[in-house]
Structure formats: structure tokens, C-alpha cells
Image (cartoon, rainbow, N blue to C red):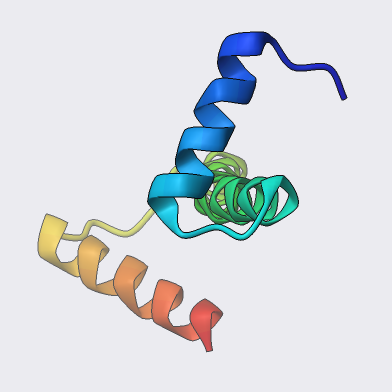
Length: 79
């Protein structure tokens, strides 16, 4: 991996200030953060795609009913 001098300085500062033991530990921390952020994004993207593919509902529901249904589905998926 190639990094610039300013990036290397930033990493060293993070190690000193952030309590990381070395560069590898700091980079693993960044990767974990990226994984968590992308997990939420990918789950949201999949839910949107599922909604698009399901088509228009024939049932007439209030916004509260729709939100309750969505929250119930989300809770079921997280288990």
C-alpha cells in the first residue's frame, strides 16, 4: 500500500493521540468502521430494491400502518 507523507503523519498522530499500538491496529479500526457503515447502506439499498420489485400495493393503508409494518419487518430481520 502506498500512502502520502501527510497521510503517514496523520496515521502517526492517530496512533499517538488515539491510543492505537501501531499502524496495523489503526487501519483495522478504520476497516471495521467502513464495514459497519457499508452494512447499513447495503441493507437500506436491498430494502429499497425489495420495495421497488414488490410493485404497487392494492391495499390502502395509512402512513402509520406502513411504518408499523416496516418496523416490524426490520425487527424480524435483525434477530
